[in-house]
Image (cartoon, rainbow, N blue to C red):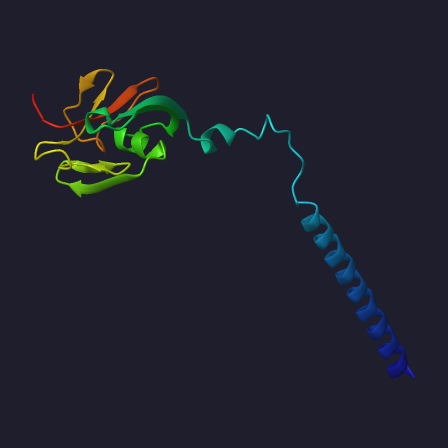
Length: 158
């Protein structure tokens, strides 16, 4: 008789444990379905939110292909801090053909207008805030408010 009493007790313990496991599972599924985290407002995401959001800068980029009978367009773009003149060009959405060189990225063509299309000395040059850069476009770090101008030239002169 003590064996049947022990068996009933073991069965009762097993059922209690199974019920507890089922309750824990239901609770876990409920928490997961609700997102599993406490609600936060959109404006205060905690002390680390500023570190997670990368600072950005706004610059204007002009692509001037008028020397090749093209158009001149200007686009304002937002970029991460430390972005380069090359990054800004790519951010405009223009079709950029570039290759890596010893001096950084060399822009071979923009929107189908390529170096050499209008003579041996034709190609793309860039300047920032009205001054020619002394480094390659992928090396020139921009600052907020900079104006980058990409100009297609048919003859390079210094």
